Length: 113
Length: 111
Image (cartoon, rainbow over all chains, first blue to last red):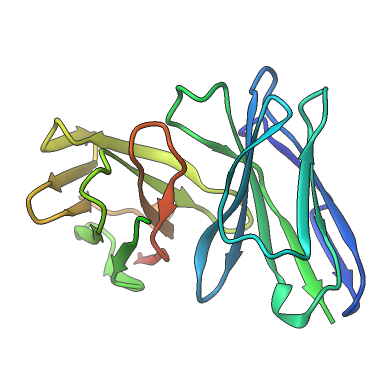
């Protein structure tokens, strides 16, 4: 158990809908990363937050947004969902910006039908 | 930005054999190279890492080698066991910046 908690584990929704994925980092970890894992693209970095502020952006679509709350949990919002958004979404956390090891949650499997 | 290529995409070996997974990176500024193991239904977990001031690092049955000149690094698993079956990801970053991952290698170890 990495200490990173993601909910829900599975999510099935229809095209055009909006969903929210939740991540609770390890206790005390300030930095949160979101990744998308699809079969053909591997692990794609979406966005990073550090202590409530956006730190870095990767290949995140405009339909997607995220935030990190004062209690350090993070949410990834996916809207106007398309079939191609079906993937595993992982959250990872690090204690600070000066750490290299990232601790991953078990992921949320999103299926868009 | 950084680009990491990983080969092979799948690798099947017999129990007891060795397995080698190779990665190349594009950004010469990258200096941190971790390897993650992802078991079925779980998130990736760090198994070993190497920094650019080191050419090789070992931890029991696993080892990683780095060739900075050629910009490639490899994961070596000796005496493979069925529990080594998983997807392995290499990654690269410059210092503490965001990791760029390869597309993964599915390793199957047959008893």
